[in-house]
Amino acid sequence: MRKSLVAFILITIVVLGLAVQHVWILLSLLITDYSQYAISRADLPAPKSNAINDRPQLIPKIIHQTYVNDSIPAHWKGPQKSCIDLHPDYEYKLWTDKKAREFIAAEYPWFLENFDGYPYPIQRADSIRYFVLHHFGGIYIDLDDGCNRSLDPLLAYPAWLRLTTPTGISNDAMGAIPRHPFFLKTIDSLPKYNRRWILPYITVMGTTGPLYLSIIWRHYMNGNPGRDDTVRILFPDEYNNHSWSFFTHHLGNSWHSSDVKLIFWMGQHWLLLTFLGFAIGFSLLFCIYSFCVRRRQADTKGRFSYSRIPFYRRISQKDIELDDRHEV
Ligand SMILES: *[C@@H]1O[C@H](CO)[C@@H](O)[C@H](O)[C@H]1NC(C)=O
Image 1 (cartoon, rainbow, N blue to C red):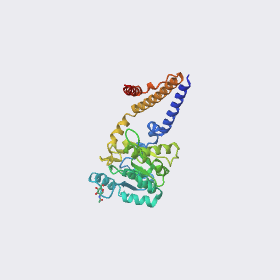
Image 2 (image 1 turned 45 degrees about the horizontal axis):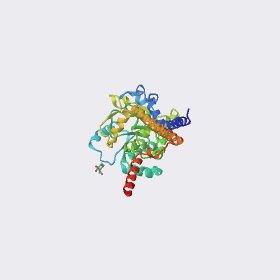
Image 3 (image 1 turned 90 degrees about the vertical axis):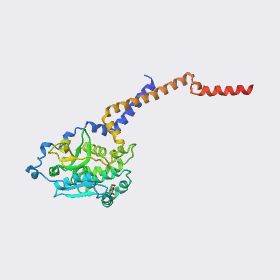
Image 4 (image 1 turned 135 degrees about the vertical axis):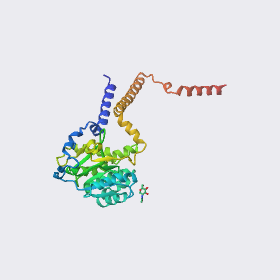
C-alpha cells in the first residue's frame, strides 16, 4: 500500500476517534436504558391510597417555581393554583428574577458573575432551579405544569428527574433532598459548560437546559452512585398521561424561538444527519487526500505547469496581445 494511503486511513481513524470521543456521552444518552432507574408505577401508591402515609418522606415539603416577577400570566394561574391547592402543608416559593439574583449573591457568590453573564434570561431561570434544589431541597415545577394529585409519594426518593417523550431528561419537574450529590455536581459543572453555540437554542440546551442536565446525569450515573445517592427517573405515564399521573401539562413554553423547529427536525432525523455528516467528512478528507497525491505526482514527474492554474493562460495571452500592439 502506498504511504500516502496509509497516512490517509490513519488520519481518518484519528479524526473519527476524536469526534466519537467528543460526543460519546451524547451517543450513550441515545442508547441509555432509563427503565433501570425508573420509579416503577407499581411502587407508587394510588392517589387516595393509605399506603402513601407508610412511606418515608425524605424530600422536604417545598414547591419551587420561577417567573420574571410576581405577576403570573393568566394562562399559568390555573396550573399554579392547582399545585398550591393540592399541597396546603407545603411551603411555596416563587423565584422571581430579583429574588433569584439575591439568593445566588447570598448563598453561591462564586456563581454570581456567571449568573449575571448569561446572554439568555432562560439560562438564569434554568440554573436557579438547580441551586434552590441543592440548597433547600424540595420539588421544582415549571409554571406550565399543573398538579393532578398530591406529590407526597415522590418525597420517598432522595432525587428524581423526569423523562420526556420520546427520550431525554427534562428539567421541568425535579425533586431532591438538600445537598444531594447529583445537584452538587449539576451546579458545580455550570461554569465549565458555559459556552456559546451557533444557535441560541443549542446554547440554552447545552449550558443550563435539559441537554446539560442529561449530560451531567449520565456522567454522574457512570460513577455508579450508591443506593441513596442514585437519581431515579419518572416516566411519561407517571408524569402526565393518565388519571393517576402527577401532573397536567398546559401550553405556553415562553422562550421557544425559530431555531426550535430546526432542532426538532434534526432530532427526528438524527440518523440521516449522522450518516450525512460522516459521508461529507469522508468526502472532504478524500478530496484533500487526492489533491495532495495529484500534486505530489505532478511535482515528481516535473510536469507541473502554471498553465494549469485557472485564468493564468488567459491573463498571459492578454499580456502578449498588449505587447504585440506596442510593437506595431
Ligand atoms: C412582570 O413581567 C412581565 C413580563 O416581562 C411584564 O409584562 C410585567 O409588566 C411585569 N410586571 C411588573 C409588576 O413588573
